Length: 443
Image 1: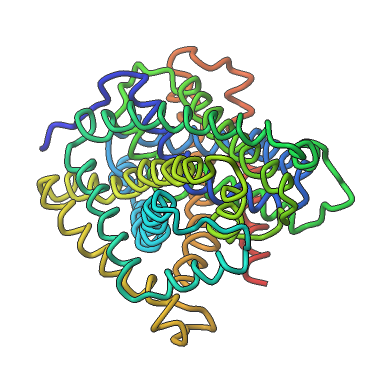
Image 2: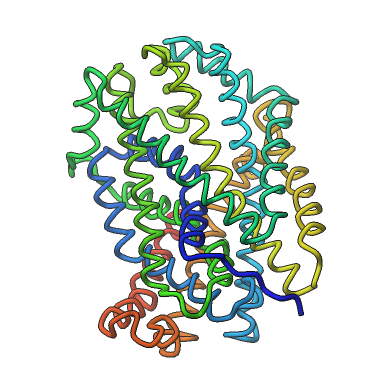
């Protein structure tokens, strides 16, 4: 049996887990989803859902890993037996599917760092920038080259192992990420006209809330917290049994929400300051924001800083997405870390090829009316993640049940009333919310 690695320190674990949660979901996705859903009201609903059941699911995944000291498949087998390992397999597969298109978008961030540095995106016209973005992603070779570079970075970090690879990288990258984020937030808030964006972001307008707002907020919590793909379970498996899990999970959740909140402060005031629409969708990052940077003194420098921030967030999350698969093969088949990482990275890149080409030469090839990229995105985020989260909640809440309370409280770390609330959330609140997501997505 391979000796299991562990985190070198609590700070290292928190930084790594926060790095998993703080990714493109926070820096890229959160601002445009907030803009699409009315601003302040969405922010309030999002935070309420985080407190309502997001943190409970986060703790549940970490608890499974810490208790079993195994990968997602091994953890469900050890604690549940029979059919429950299928949930672990689903988590590992989900992460791999997500990584296959995640590295495509992450590659775009690397490309935009270079383009910003060379002044190639210095235009205030969103139409011009939209055409440039469309031309870039439609190119059959450039996006794949950047995706390959990004995948190589991920492989390099994961090959280093837990303490010398993942933990060491996150101990440096996460503080840098928050420093860059704060610098950009301060610049955005000092722009003339930023007050309108600040009001849009912080003042709830309940007249703009509908069922879609709640659906978007719940989906954002899953995407942001990395729930349902086994990453937090795997990271939890490298924790000591003496770790105060509720405190660690709360710290990670706070850092994740803080990053999302600051991302909104960074993007929305700047967008309003220059008269652009906050509901520009995914193009807010790669089309609208470069126009904002072009209008700023020293804007190219701020553009470089912004896309560097995006790349760091993407890297820390991508590392965590790959680790469950690596952990599975090390635990269950005793394959060396270097070998698993090498093979998995090549296969992942090969799956990224059709995802990237679906913006260009293969854009006319569709399955169920969706391109390969859109299909992978739909399957992972609309089906696989919610199902994984649902099964985790049902397993911990009902199949494991009361013994999970003892494992979580760690001889008194979590007061009994709060532990009981946590279990009730997993048994009732989370399943109802997740089933609603699934029904909404499929209807």
